[in-house]
Amino acid sequence: MQRRHSGEPERGASPVRSMTLGRRIADQLGRWQRGAISDGDRSRRVSRTFFFHFQASRIHPFSLRPGYTLGLGILSAFLFVVLTVTGALLMVYYVPSVERAYGSTADIMYVVPAGRYLRNMHRWAAHGMVVSVVLHMCRVLFTGSYGNGRSVNWLIGIGLLVLTLLLSFTGYLLPWDQLSYWAVTIGTNIAAAGSDLTSALGLHALDPGRTVKLLLLGAQIVGQDALIRFYLLHIVLLPLLMAALVGLHFWRIRKDGGLTRPRSLAEGAGSTAGADGRGLILSWPALFWAEAAVVTLGTAALLLAAYTLDAPLGEIANPAAPDNPAKAPWYFLGVQELVSYSAFAGGVLVPLLLALALAAVPWFDRERRGIGIWFSDSKGLQTTVRSLVAGAGATIVVMAPAIIWGTGRAWLHSLHPLLPLLVNPATILAGCIVGWSWVIYRATRSTRCTVLAFSAASLVAVVLLTAIGLWFRGADWQFVLPSI
Image (cartoon, rainbow, N blue to C red; front, side, top):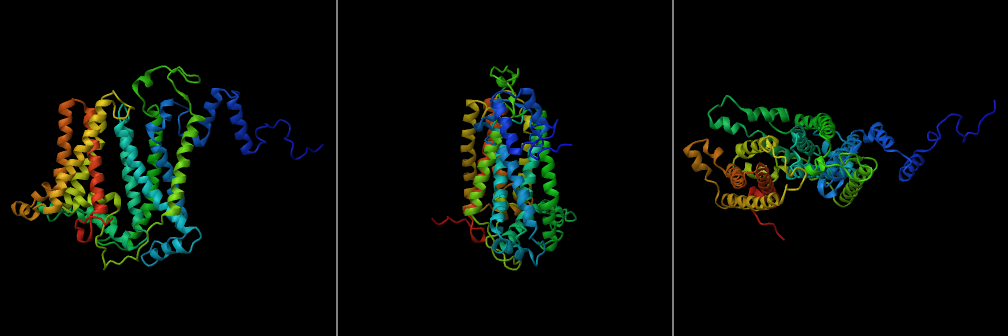
């Protein structure tokens, strides 16, 4: 039998199979541009490809507008992938023990080839993910994208925000330096603030704060038990939960008909070429290029940050020499500011009420108008701007007297032990925000405007409280003006 030349495909073999991957991609793109690939072929290609399978085969052109989604959802997912990859590489050199954790982290920074760059990427990707997830939820709130049957996915999004904060918080301890040790000490003390309520009520047999702290740390102090627990949570349990919820989040987007869009576009017929009767177009290649652009820009920003900004590594943790001031991670500094006036109200009550209020948003606001539109309409935009001003004003008015003159906590406690827990800057500020939202509801009779007012006022309050803790708190938690 005559042997074929090695470069000639066998008889009956598909010419496409003999091509390299690059030539296949170029050939497919060329055929698509020439119109040689039918819409059915493109749709099947999306459904058969693992990379595209979590996306719908058809999308609405409105979903591709950069000014609508800002690419925040894809950016958050991309940063989670970066964290998973860089974290797995850092695990090769990191040792989770109080004797060697700091040394192994220092080795990564100063000995391991490209270790400093790798740790920088992991650090800034973690901070970037916190910011992008928060902004993504703000985008959903301010465009009303939680409505129209999407309440389940909204709750999944809240769960993803909580997991993002927990992932960043559990990773904070691992370097075992002064910054991380005392930041986690402050954070776990905040989580244990529930004991203030039971103590004020005289229920001394109940100590929920001690139980929470024991679950987190494995002891009453930050030590080896805490380090190994945080390490396992950070590399195993929380990433698995995050991956599962991310997959469920994308699946729910598909089940809910894709990203939200204005009602006129959702119900109108498509008139552009290549669109179906609902105005949808094929995902490939438009969606791919849009997501590739977000990933490319995110990668460039991350590489630049990792090259120019080093992740901090201070002195080795010393339980006998606390930092002054000892501060929680920056994303918990707003809570720490409120905790400095009331541990229970600032660390438990107000954050819990805020989380419950956010979870209840889809059931409170059932308006179908303005879904998929930033601030719904001109009235919603005016409400948002006014609420930003009102929230900033309320924060300044409530916090300034507390910072200058104190809160009279001792006098309130002399009247009744419960009063300092119920009357403090945290509860007063929360009451001001709720009161403003009620005023907006009475003035507009619109649940959408009420949600916009509550969201905007809460957002600016959190930002200002974080700024106070970050830049205006010095030794002994005294208010100081930063030097220029």
